[in-house]
Image (cartoon, rainbow, N blue to C red):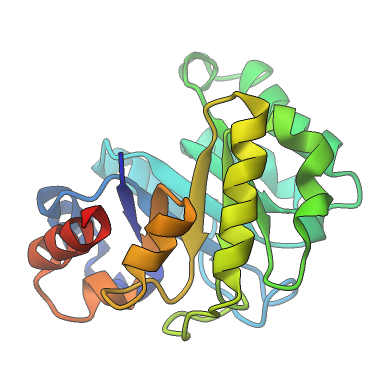
Length: 230
């Protein structure tokens, strides 16, 4: 099943409630939340309070992509804010196995009964120049692998073609585990690139300008899914 995760980095932040409602009506599968700290990446975006506000406005899964370093101190706040998926960068943690387990521990040990009753999926992301070997020994910890097809930090960048081979290899790595792990691609995915991304093995893709750029979100989501299924 192909899933689309529109990135709210491209949304109109002055009317975020309406934007989220429009994405729900458009048939989006996830809401992708790009969290940037101005340190790990050269941009600053949003934090847990916005995620908590989104949680009150939508039932769609909140797919929180943490582009921050250090990442461990901020994981509890995003868990409590209502994230359904927390994806951390392999490059942002000195002890990746510990960081991934930390996400699950924050759910289990939360002081909130509501948080403890939720299942927060664990994701790991790789920048374009980071080899897959960086996550080879933590595949038993993850529910999602995110391959960056641009250098993180800004929306609207062009897709890096070399990422396709990495996606193919990641799919093979996932299949070898025998586990149900989603493979997400983020960066430059649009009508021209989505089919090749899906053919390479991805089943979830982040779309920013491809969804928000034309104004008709429902049409954009529908066309992306149709192109992906060809």
